[in-house]
Length: 305
Image (cartoon, rainbow, N blue to C red; front, side, top):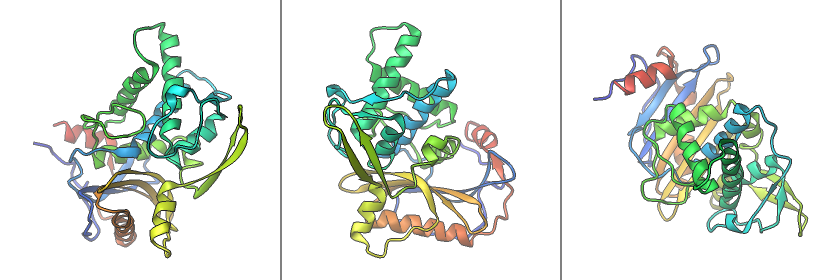
């Protein structure tokens, strides 16, 4: 039976959510790595992460660069094998993008093609470093994704692809994904783009062009809700498996500068996902932090007990 650190559940009013599972945590400014859980609902329930998976793809690529003390690649080239169905089908074989533009396309437009490009490039890099053969570069990268997830204490997660398209056996939890969101805050390459409403890609190759892309989360919600407004939103990633699973991992900022990470899994519609985000943000604004901050290490120790 899982234990829970004293004071981890917290202060603040309860909140009704349509999502099947959720968690909302306040990050401590004075104690790095510490937090207060403001609300949770079945936070350890396994579910498909959908395109929130792409946050782990980005973190894994950046982790590989950091571990090898290497600069970002000057450009990434789309190969025919990278082409994929689903969101973000805006690239063609032969297109050349900077690493930062590829990240922007993955995190904002939720490009499955871009996720494959990153996985292939960095998986091939790992195989070259290891002088290994007999495994496809994307498969090697996915293995690294799972290793990074374990290092982030995402104990109830398993990933099978870099883009989040539905696959039997691919799953995570709201609690695990909240730890992934917090890890993203250590990477300016992610935080510099994941909250933008739009971005312009500079594409080279046989068909050079400037390609505007929009945040799929913000654009899809604004289309249904003319009054859409998220002034506290600082970044994150949505994920959808139609027709009825809509996820969101987000970082928001309270008026006093404190950051809040929230994850909702399985909201039934786009509008329900938006409503769940607003409900958790409103609850966080109203909450008083009566509980003592708990570190990720303490939480991991309690959950493994």
